[in-house]
Length: 412
View (tube, rainbow, N blue to C red):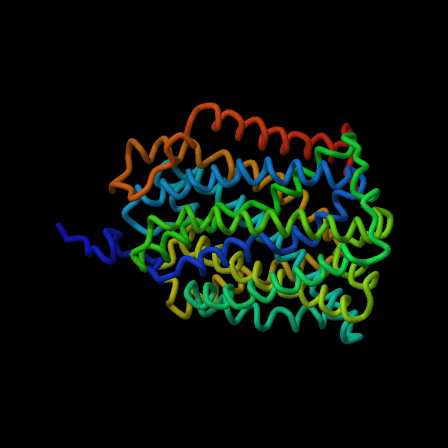
């Protein structure tokens, strides 16, 4: 029998390599994944329901998606090979579960990348006076380069850009609150008739279970696995502040009637030319940081699911990268999918799969796992928490189906 080569902190060799991440690089990757197209669509998607309902769903979704992420964390730590989420599903749930999770990752990722393609095209078109498709091509060049370079490059790039994003948002939200046109009355109205679809958008904004195996690879390589859950929670707190703060500033300043699908366009115009430039620079940064993490995780899921021998083999990496970038660009300019609708439907499907399937995965991993985990979920894996996740995310998917069939109202 051939002896298995064991590398780095008790994890075995696989097609996916261990590349070190620091605590704050992990935080930045969480924020960068969360703060993408979702944050740009929340104000528009919640304008009829109202900001209080949006904030309520942001809190609920943050709690339960983070708990679901912790299930995935423990599952990765009970598995001796670095695997992506679809590979974990294959190990613990079989081929059916694996393909279902891979489809969820692909649908969510392509939905994101469609939104980044159209959003970046609109913003660069307004900046430079270029056709939107040319603006999208300009956006794709630096985005694709970082994805090609891999996990370590993604973590470093995320950390630098995320700090800049935070500074820009503090300035813009502060300017909005101090503006004479800001009205708290715009923020107090709400209507639950339009409230449930907002939950689907918040699911999309927070869904990042597919990032956990990347973080495990990074924290295992740096020998700091115990800090990973704290890194996830820290990132989630910053994400919530931005998710709630940006719609608050935009709706409070403009009123719900004037919010644009890509929030920074009309919001920036309302504050003046400097703010228009700053807000849309933030939007581009938000889309590019999210593109990096989502593109990287989709690429490694393709490597894992299609059984490519090595993620750094140039031939296979080119194939995987083409599968990442070509479909969303083609769909974005096909006219088939709108910006907010792309987020709503991909969030509905991917959210229910990626939030619920980690429950049976962890149950099986606790029976079939092949290593002792450095960290466990503890009381987060209580049956009450599992039941709430199934009810909330299953209900969101059911609502999306009934809305599509015309039985329930759309939110925007």
